[in-house]
Length: 119
Image 1 (cartoon, rainbow, N blue to C red):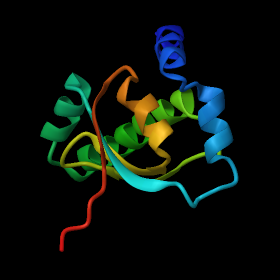
Image 2: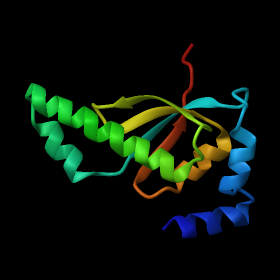
Image 3: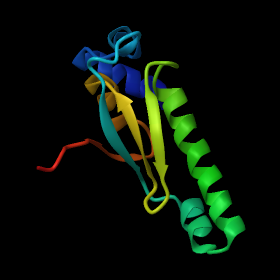
């Protein structure tokens, strides 16, 4: 699956290497994005368990799931995950626009939206 993503981005001029070059060592062009995931039956099962143990398992499951997505999609050190959301299967991450485009095509991702301040 990752090979297919790489090929589709090469047509647009966006590669994992180009994203790495634009993101490494610079936080000037990073912004906060929210990433929401596709339906996941395991998330639904864990979310239905309203015990303290269930809440802990859900937190651990989502954190691991989100971290693994970022690790297989983006270069290490080129992003900063700020939080995992439990009420919805999603997370917030500081990334570049090119990295957001990579995540939009990643398997399991439903929506990637840039944070917008409301006046």
